Amino acid sequence: MCLFCKIVAGEIPSTKVYEDETILAFRDIAPMAPTHILVIPKTHIPSVDGITAENSAVVAHIFETIPAIAAQEGLTGGYRVVSNCGDDAGQTVHHLHFHILGGKKLNVEMA
Ligand code: 5GP
Ligand code: ZN
Image (cartoon, rainbow, N blue to C red; front, side, top):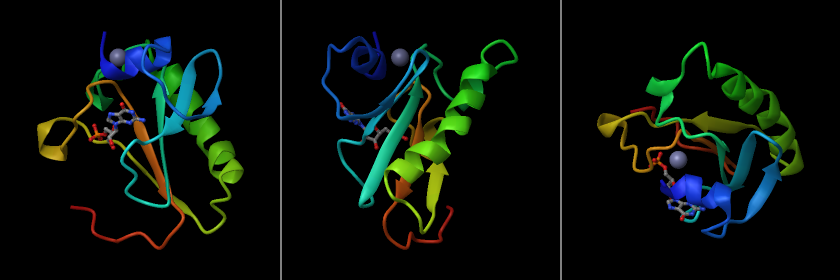
């Protein structure tokens, strides 16, 4: 089981900020901003590359939920959503996840 599947299963503890039947959001263990949350599907999808017509409903659900998570976290000034896909992007956990970063003026560099 991958690291984030273990977090979904409760085998590794996490600080949850949102959970429902199909997705989970929890605080990043090494925050890069005052607010740094990871949102994941409970089912194992390896990365953005693994999104298909068959499994994309959960991705839509993640994006429908992100505004509520941002509001709950008080990110009234805005926030960034990032997903690293593959080696060149520096993906380290191979279970699809979207970073929500906020709580300060973020650096503008995209690459
Ligand atoms: P990636 O580099 O794949 O885009 O993002 C993986 C993220 O997972 C990193 O920001 C890293 O800090 C976070 N992370 C790695 N292991 C754990 C863990 O055990 N718990 C939590 N909450 N975050 C983790
Ligand atoms: Zn997984």
